[in-house]
Image (cartoon, rainbow, N blue to C red; front, side, top):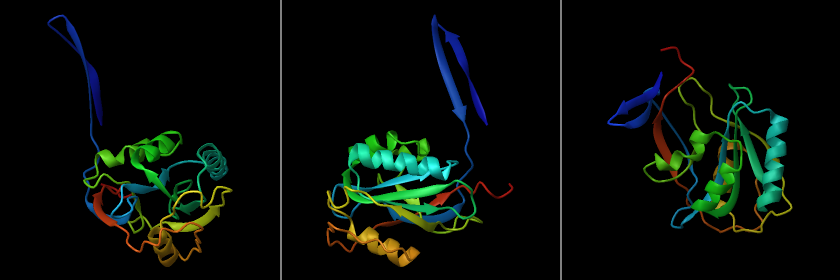
Length: 191
């Protein structure tokens, strides 16, 4: 539900907008973008309702524009045209913001670190209510692979959890990863 309008008081116009969102009740979790003990993040994307061909065109354009490493795509098996994407290169927080804002990924996801107590992006890796966990779909290889340092811990985690075969060319040698649990609203159940 959303309520918006304007109010004229004392010769001034005040605009307002209020909205509601479902109350988080479902516990789930996923990988944090933050690389432990550093100021760096991997590059995550959360896409909803995007044609797969349009997604691939956008990811290739982002790779070219920002000289990114390979992009690893995970699809939501119970939702058509919904994808998670990660690039395991090292990025500063402001670089992640610039690149994700240059994409058409979910704007709520782009702004998520403002609401996350650890100031990270988190991509879900586990079930969420009656929604299945993501599955590995494919990798878009990059000619810039290995230009930046890459998170070995994230690659190892994804290889173990999803059975993908991600090989890095500029590994940081790190073996620590942050997994974050959180409450979320399950929008697929009838309430």
